[in-house]
Image 1 (tube, rainbow, N blue to C red):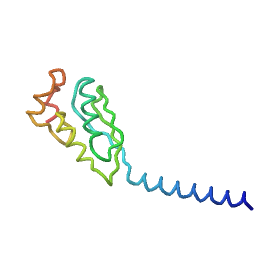
Image 2 (tube, helix red, strand yellow; image 1 turned 90 degrees about the vertical axis):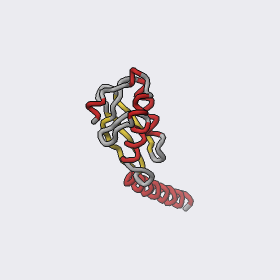
Image 3 (cartoon, rainbow, N blue to C red; image 1 turned 45 degrees about the vertical axis):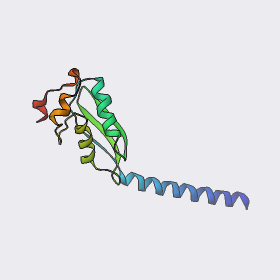
Image 4 (tube, rainbow, N blue to C red; image 1 turned 45 degrees about the horizontal axis):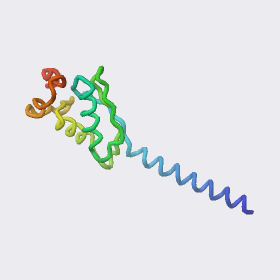
Length: 118
């Protein structure tokens, strides 16, 4: 009888775990978008700006493709908030242009072609 009770409890715990995973998956989103930059310093700055947003769990920018992949909780933030944070750090995205003054403050090697950004 004890073993049967342990099995029932184990099954109940597993069912509850799967239920919470499904709820998490409904709010966890992964998206890719263009972010302008050039080098490893850009990569660090871009990823840091994305991860600074509450709800962003992962951010990975590829310097060759200029694409970032972000994973975030859509109950805590929006894709637009992530674009704004990255642009506020000086890197334009396909939805948000960085301010001239912020861009100008970037190290010279980080000055990407702004014509493509606009």
